[in-house]
Image (cartoon, rainbow, N blue to C red; front, side, top):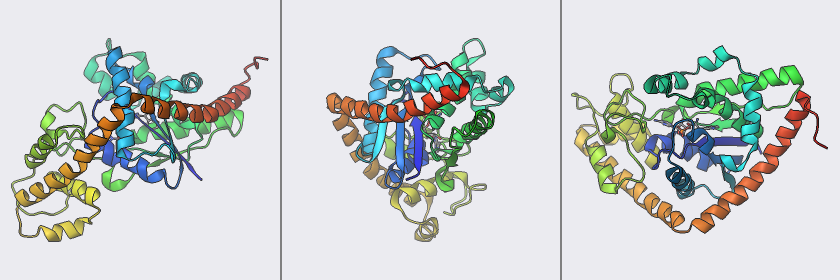
Length: 332
Ligand code: TYM
């Protein structure tokens, strides 16, 4: 079985619809066909300040949401990044393989540090993508299911894997991004040219999966469309309507042409009302299932402990080989 690995940050509290449609939904599908490793990336989370209590609670909350979304611990390995120390260890090795200029070209760092100012942005934020490289290479992943915003980090992973292999001999699998075109970038409901993101200026544009369903319904109904009335997929000319069609199509498994036909001659109101219902039907059981996992932290923690054990077995083997190739003296 080919292997996949991916991760999600615990910091958001609730996952948003972009996280789900762009990434987590693929994770659920891939556990059937792949040897799948999925993690909550708490080491990445501390690249910006975190309250300790909240970080711990949000890490459990992220794991609970992943299970509620359909990850099955019998079919995949679900773990917390900091439970596997090899991530930080291989991260150091990868730091020493990355050019300063190369790291400086990572656009996510540029965006995030610009927002924070260079005195508040940490070195950890700067080397964030390099830790992500280590995450992926430790598991010899063939594919990495993510949204479009992670593509550059996967490119860096490929470059560093090839560089290491070239210098020290074949060690790492060179991974490919697994990015589903249709859902690679879900847009903000209020600003449909911007990626849906928790750092949005207008919270009405952000669909949190753990919002009260009636809040979600309201957000969908007040989504920005355009002054036209025609329901047609055209990402350039009609980004708002196209985003709603993508969401609708993905959640229901109905093709976009079919939806265009269904709503021919009807207004945006009809589309939004129906989509609001589809969303409510999706988020209501999601909320309940997430709460069930949170209500039983012992079971949740034991799932994560088992996951960490399975992950460590793989990670430790890769790290040992890496250390040996580099020329570190074995500790006898
Ligand atoms: P994170 O936590 O920001 O996001 C988790 C996943 O959600 C996707 N995503 C979106 N997809 C479509 N449309 C959107 N609007 C949208 N917003 C977010 C992201 O692309 C991502 O797949 N650096 C990663 C976490 C990470 C990782 C890894 C991923 C750490 N190590 C190793 C893969 C492999 C991140 O911050 O994701």
